[in-house]
Image (cartoon, rainbow, N blue to C red):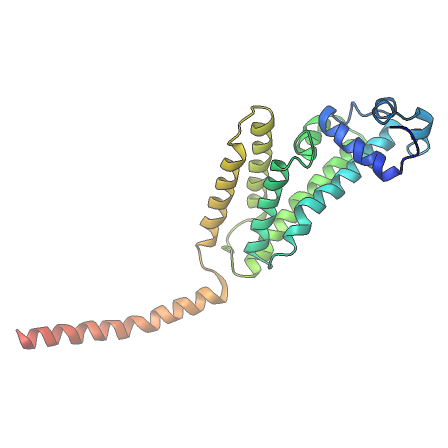
Length: 231
């Protein structure tokens, strides 16, 4: 389709193309062919291949945030929001938000050995993603929903490993059960941490249990004396 295109619509197509063919395959010429535009028309928006790649990464990050974080923010702070982020990631993969799978999983592997602005940008966004997971874990700890002994960095690492592993199995190995397995693993991991009561709620429960113990012992002793007297 020929004609004037907005920068945003161009980037939307660039994101999908890079998702399928990689950032390295995203060039002014390749995108011009895809959009049936002239190269000069694209140069008016992006002066170089690198500038196009960086703009595409930024557009992909906005789509990523909209699909995963925006819905999760509607959930209550703590465990519900952390779980919503995890489920949102798996849902976005199921729904094919990026046609080639997780844009940033693919980009991370593609550019990890290529120093430069593109790699730096992908790394910063991945650092932001891991940092957001860590923050969600800390918020769940602050709400008393997750064991305070849990290391947020360790849990974020484990969750992201499950996500990237699911992406690999689903798209490369065509494992149709990969996302179900990942969802099960995520839920079980979080539930194990949730089972340990911490914070003021745990202290109150423990105090109640201690207070109840003597009374329970007295009732048991009384019952024993009554049975003996009747015998």
